Amino acid sequence: MPLEFALQHRGLFPDPGPWKVPPTQTVTLRDTLGIEALPRQRFNKTKRTPYILNIMVVGETGLGKTTFMNTLFNTPLNEEIQSKNPQNSQTVEVTPVHYELVEDGVVLNLTVIDTPGFGDQLNREHNLDPIVQYIDNQFEAFMNAEHSHEFRRAIPDTRVHVLLYFIAPSGHSLKELDIKALQVLSNKVNVIPVIAKADTLTRDEKASFKKAILKDLEANDIKVFPTAYPDDREGIEELEKHIPFTVIGSDRFVSVAGQMVRGRTYRWGVVEVENDQHCDFVHLRELLMTNALHDLLEFTHTVHYHNFRANKLRSNGRPESILACDDSYEFRIERTKQNMADDMMKKEEEMRQNFVMKVREKEANLREREEQLNQRRQQLMAELEEQRLALAAEEREFQELINASRNASVSKGNKIFGKKN
Image (tube, rainbow, N blue to C red; front, top):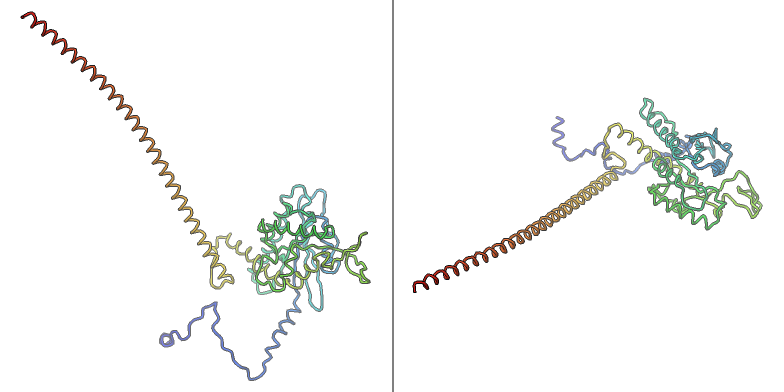
């Protein structure tokens, strides 16, 4: 009976497959169901759930990282974290500190991960090892939680969502340590370059320094957030123009035109932290908190964590899979096709080069053999000429002998006949 039914209705109800959605039909409701309340319910539930943001700050000592974090979140987070043994420390310390910020009923569980000691040693070869190990350990912990029997529960997310890399305001190009650090870290976490202590640079120096940094980033293929993730550009095109961000940190409030604002007072005037004419602090804060907070969390999970997880699985012998259910199916298929085309072109070029090389080798061998044959021919012609000359000499000698013999015979005959007569 099932077979007969299947044969009778074959092709009328095609199987959409496990990863496809069958076509739907729009219907008209006769009465109100309250569907319009679903977004509000989702919003209220989401608002009650605390948000998580883990920020790592990396940079040399003395660039004002802690002061900037206090300025960014408008609250005194903590005191300056110093290395335990600043004189004899040979490694970089990674110190996460947790905070809870509440604004209009929205709770943000903030973790600030400082890296005191970075760039302070004479030998900076292993400065990145503790930082990279910390980032990988958080990925490893999240992956183990996914594989545990309690995976349905909320997994504590300790992964680094954004890394603020502080660059010294030297006014020149990036240091070798900065380039190496950014190359490694940009493949593991969302990196935002920040020029610290921007009040030490003039406006022209800031512009030229930004151009030099952007040139170094492009030359060394360093991916920065959000430029390297062009999925959604709405609302951030103007903010991208300020990368790398010049920032100023201050824990003090100064009076400007009768208002108390964060800033620094100098003999020549006042520098305001939240004045976009003085620095890019407001643009960086808008990018982090207003426009891209959700993107930072999403890209950390879908890009960096997935790359770590895939590499971890493939290191255990699991081959790379290409399935239609993958989120990046089309991209991976196109990338595979492009890689195959590139490999084919590369093999064709290698074959062409090998053919040209073999033709040139054959031509060289033929020319060498031709030269050898010409030399042999010249040698044989020389020997033949010598033999011809020798034969000619012998022939002359033989002719001379014949002539002499003939002359002798004639003379003898004359003598004989003369006596007879």
